[in-house]
Image 1 (cartoon, rainbow, N blue to C red):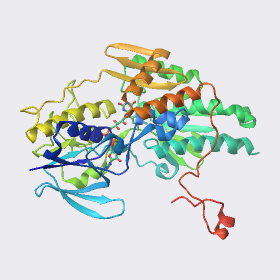
Image 2: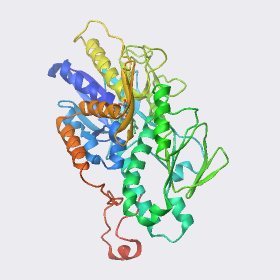
Image 3: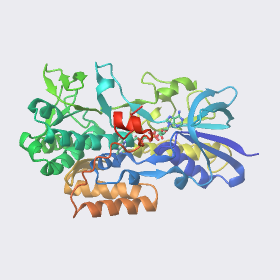
Length: 439
Ligand SMILES: Cc1cc2nc3c(=O)[nH]c(=O)nc-3n(C[C@H](O)[C@H](O)[C@H](O)COP(=O)(O)OP(=O)(O)OC[C@H]3O[C@@H](n4cnc5c(N)ncnc54)[C@H](O)[C@@H]3O)c2cc1C
């Protein structure tokens, strides 16, 4: 008999589970189905560099079909689950629904940006979680520089040249550092904008940034950013956003047309439909074997799951943890179908290293108990990520991108129209420009 194993989510966690199961399970013993809503894995640690243009966006993703060899990759989402019947519902890209039986189900649909009911946030701010966000932000920065350079209106120029980032976790800080670095380089091509000068602001509600790393390194990172003229506001919250301003808890209204919301992540809200036990944060409750509470043959891991951390509490939402959990989950699923170890193994990984890239060849990081900052940390972070990005061809492409960016100036092409093909109807062309409207 061949076991049916369904994996929902093809990010760091789901893709790794699939790959390890492919290696462990003899071909005829199991049918593996990997369901993901896109056909690639996004290497998020490189997202800030894709936004800043040091890496080509296509080089920070790896096609899932290159990562998994024998699993059946289905493009769509798992949006229903009947634990008693042992079935999941899958909605494909063409809108078709299908009910699929499983013997073992692995849930790894990740997380989404945390959202708060702040007036104007959803209308006027942008997140930083997907490749589309990164490409949008890069184009946005170039567009604001272009318009600021052309306008005669000093008030508008001030709004265009102010960039507000909300949330001082590693994703927000890295995105801010890389984009500010990019904009500072690009400014030399915009003499009128340069005369006015840019303003970059980081707003963080807590009394420190980077809760993921040691306080001394976080202090170094803030000093470094302030040294570049970035206005870091701690113990400050965003109160409201409009198309041309951001109001913060100090009572100030910052004239700004670009507000980036990077205030953390929450588990994928789609989990609520999947009839699995969730904790108060919406994470799937699992034990240290990654088995969902009260369910023999359902497993969950990665950003979507409350995985007990051997160091105490629960694991943080990082790719490092997701990949390590994936290996344990795969071993335990294989064990449950009678292959490999006799009894399931516990998740025991403790985060050994963490790095935060600050742009300009600088980073902060920790390996074991040793702390690093400046160029050594940057070099270690880059080497580490190089070793981790899946696929040899992606590694080579990333190295070529970095090498090519050393002698050449930044590329300032504003390609916001990518993904929006031109219209064929000449009348609409005359009325509204050459591109289809968004949405
Ligand atoms: C900008 C940024 C930088 C980061 N940098 C680092 C870093 O340097 N180091 C680090 O360790 N971590 C980093 N992270 C965190 C890391 O990306 C996450 O912890 C990691 O992606 C979690 O892996 P996952 O597999 O659980 O989720 P994801 O990688 O998010 O994958 C989930 C997948 O499931 C798919 N999916 C969603 N819903 C469904 C559904 N219903 N059915 C099927 N598929 C579904 C999604 O499209 C996605 O492909 C960063 C994150 C961001 C945003």
